[in-house]
Image (cartoon, rainbow, N blue to C red):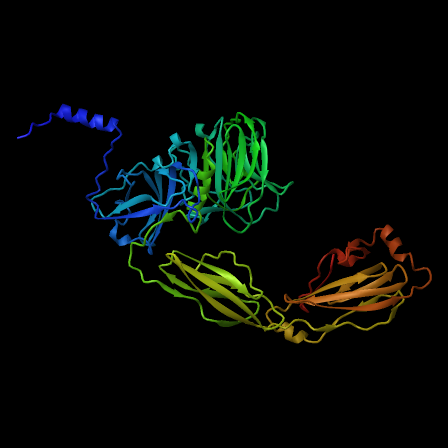
Length: 591
């Protein structure tokens, strides 16, 4: 019979083994289900060369990938472990068993560059398990995180645990790039986070945010800024140079750096770093600007304003669009870290490869060809059951722009046309490594008549007596009975200066300044293709009238305008559009 090892000896042995670098896997024997997913950082995946330590990995789950019915309704039995069996810290951004959707952040100790062998194991199926705490360990301040706002839900919690919860009451919830985002219209809106020690780094910083701008016109639109009276750090467009500007207060060199603006109408990951020697700007994981910089970052007691600039705790210079996943770090993240974040967090991510854990027969169908009338709207409904991704794209015809291609039901506005036209859209879905696609043909019928008109044929004008030019619209009755019944008239003049005015559906020539041919042009439309015609009058002035318009202008009775060619003209008529509801005609001058 062997000798029993004493408790003291066993303890000493464990300490010795741990000192030698051995570790013990966590016990997941009570969990009935598990599955491995792979991390691909090769050229076919995230395409990074260097290793990234303590990476916050985003895992997305849906009904095509995960059997939600096998886990607890609140996801409380979900666990993760590394290849060696050691439990991994994680944080649930969302677990919705009814929608069968989940987004989970997992702290990966080391992501190897240029590899597709990195494995993470997911465990579930333990009715006795309770939700685990420790989600803050994913975005641990010890790893350099100062503030992380997922924008999930109504309470904008700081995922670092620094109690930097933000006030987003002046914004509205909107679809984000991950789950929820926050929408701002630019009207003095913003998200305020209280000042905290971690938000005042000295030697290095990283600012990062997913943005979906509506557009960049209308002045400065801050993405992120701290320091109301004195800029501490700021990421905002510079209207004077049509660029995105990183401003870092306190630096003795390179305090301002400018890079390209993200395109409007789409999601982009904007990241800026300062490491004490260089400032760098990244757009969608790619380095777009770098410059030398030096000095200690400024520090203020002001709030952090997300999507705005805060002046006396009031948002100003607001962003116009949607923001998601805003992060401030007191370290300069590496280029590989930033590229990996984009590859992992974007809608069609390329880092995580999770095998489908549910039996789901792949089903695909594109909408049938259809016929519609011009000027309306159409919803194209497709199906892609169990697909890992899907998208719409234009194929041919004057197809309207697709604002959000990653939807199954595509709403399009049918354009006005001058003749029957065919639009072709393509719906594509991804099933594993295979793709299926189908085209739908939309035949648009011309159903709204365009205005048909003629101009009076007049050979001469004495330049003195008022002359009324009124187009004869042959199909006016048909237009009044159609959907687009308002006719827009755009007049242009080429030749001698002329004093002009308008009447409902007509142009009035009042005085001319010189002799010569005067070309009167008219373009008419009711929302579709414009029909343009012109007529030429020969001006033959009566004696003493040549200076009449100039004298009137000196007296302040006639204003100036510019015609479609950019030439300066005299007359009341160029000041705006005239709308006559009774006739449904809206005449105006081109300027």
